[in-house]
Image (cartoon, rainbow, N blue to C red; front, side):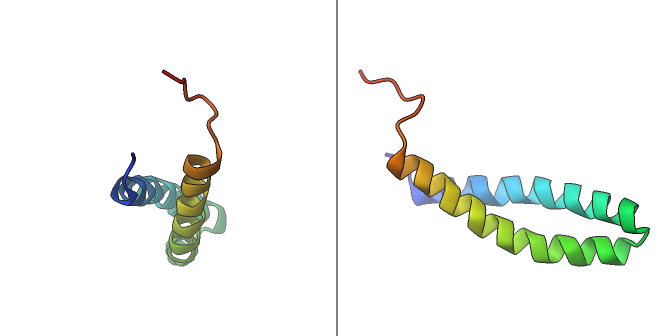
Amino acid sequence: MVSYKRHIAKTISWRIIGTIDTVIISGLITGSWGAGLAIGGVEIISKMVLYFLHERAWYKFSKFGIKEK
């Protein structure tokens, strides 16, 4: 069994990487690091929730790639 703590830790670590990427790209595109940080701030929460739900759905409903013993 995989614990919720593992899913939460994966969610947070992936979101940190993704948000850094978003802030950098947004800052470069807009020319404003303040805008990049604002976009990253909103995005970090929404995407953590979406990723967690996605991860749990895969765990609960999909057996794709899991070999039976």
